[in-house]
Length: 86
Image 1 (cartoon, one colour):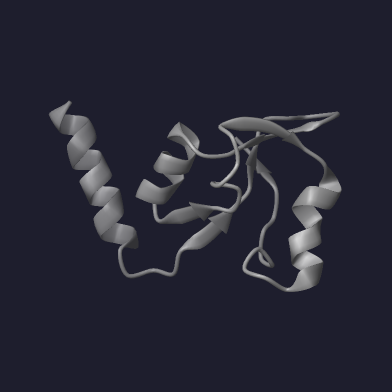
Image 2: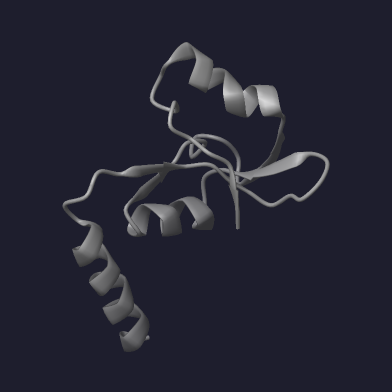
């Protein structure tokens, strides 16, 4: 446990002064975009200096490409999101 805490502290120290990276996390290959929301994934991304863009959504939910892409076209804080599988 001490090793894991040390690793987390090391990562947090390295990203502390960097801008937060917005993240879209999903578990999908083909078909629906099974997307991650609040919970462990959001916590881990936050600990690593990121911000899960759908952290206000349920832990695991089905999105569609319009749900993910719409914020890009409105120019809000999700504009730099690029889907990346976990």
